[in-house]
Length: 135
Image (cartoon, rainbow, N blue to C red; front, side, top):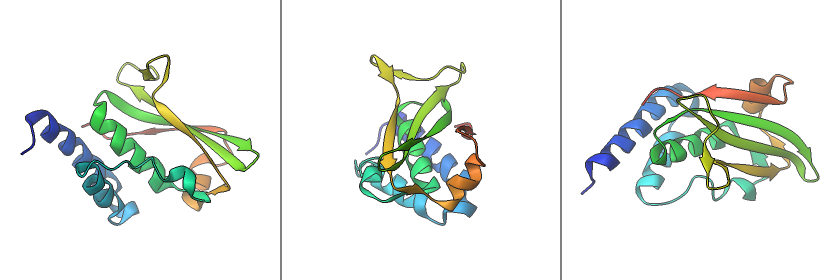
């Protein structure tokens, strides 16, 4: 049995699923299912050679469930010895970067490359903001 608070989180996740439905073809459904089982979307991102747009969205879904004030995610791309480093942080409904303890809510992943969708999203820029649907 889920609490009313958890049901609200799952509604946010379902809204995000609808947002990316045409792009993702079931990946967000898998993410939501994994989150309901207590698994993490971020655990395996650094273990792969390629970081994908789907990785970004899955992590956004995961964090949005825990932090409903999140309205967007900021991605920053940097070269790294392994290939590329991607920083992903979140922006709240006041326009501020979300903090967690002494640092920021987010992650930094180093991989060999990013997929074509992320390359298209960055369009040669160093950083990009993705607005998330209201939950």
